[in-house]
Image 1 (cartoon, helix red, strand yellow):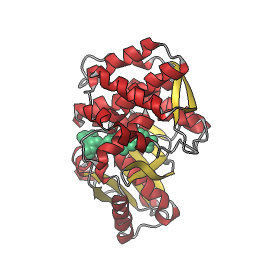
Image 2 (tube, rainbow, N blue to C red):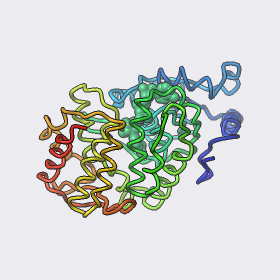
Image 3 (tube, rainbow, N blue to C red):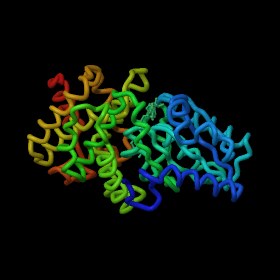
Image 4 (cartoon, rainbow, N blue to C red):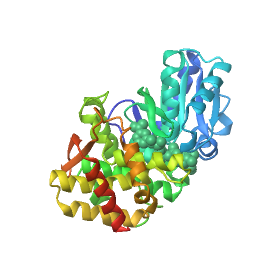
Length: 355
Ligand SMILES: NC(=O)c1ccc[n+]([C@@H]2O[C@H](COP(=O)([O-])OP(=O)(O)OC[C@H]3O[C@@H](n4cnc5c(N)ncnc54)[C@H](O)[C@@H]3O)[C@@H](O)[C@H]2O)c1
């Protein structure tokens, strides 16, 4: 299935390739650490290395807590501590077995440990397979600002096993669909048509994951450190991250994809207003939103706070709010300066919909 680049492995032969890699690490005396959380240890680790083979490769397991609230400097420090106590050196490898949170944390920990060690992502959520494991962005939340501290550190390899999706909660699958449809808006207009799904629990996401991976590789390869084009991946995220940041600091339960889903709605509205986007695209998305996501009344009730958080967005400069907008499906524009009033109107629009 997925092989847009030689360092991404999936489908038949991927598990053998991974075991072969572990064996080669053993042979060259590289220490291999597998980062898991309580869920991926239970549901995913046994698939990767059956109990009967666990001693064969001399792997060490590092377990952290799952969830966005643990995407913190404390967790990164915990990983560094465990690596240090186990004697990890510059040749060691950190394998991240988990969702976007774990891959971001493990990737960051690896990017700094001994000034940078090799890292491998094995994404276990739909969102991490289609998006977060690709492109090398790492980091953690700081003072409740999303991914406020981070680095670029590309994984040496990425292994995609869609078998892992069988144990993932449906809420997580729905949330990931916001990141997937984002690619429909910024680069692949065929995606929205492919998201008319009867049964999420039996649907095969392989083809959609492949489309997103291909798009992300193309975008990130042409602008690795986000000087221009790569910014389009943030469509929906200026508003989305501000909502997530608000929720984080008020202990409100929200998933990253759910916040991005609201962000996409507001930023499509801004695209209609400022880039003459055809209103039918917004209307189609409203239908998609109402099928998979609930209305979040606290967003408008806290609009000022959320707008203030948008000012911390990494794409802004000189105190101006800069957005990625689209003028047509697959035609994004970045660095569009939008006034606070306009963004507020988009939140008013979202609130009035009550979808
Ligand atoms: N680096 C990037 O380019 C990038 C891109 C998009 C999003 N992100 C980040 O990704 C994060 C969101 O990632 P996510 O949606 O994967 O959430 P997540 O990492 O929090 O994982 C969701 C939950 O599912 C559990 N889980 C993981 N795999 C499972 C499985 N196979 N079966 C059962 N449970 C499983 C996890 O333990 C966790 O509780 C956000 O922090 C976001 O900022 C990063």
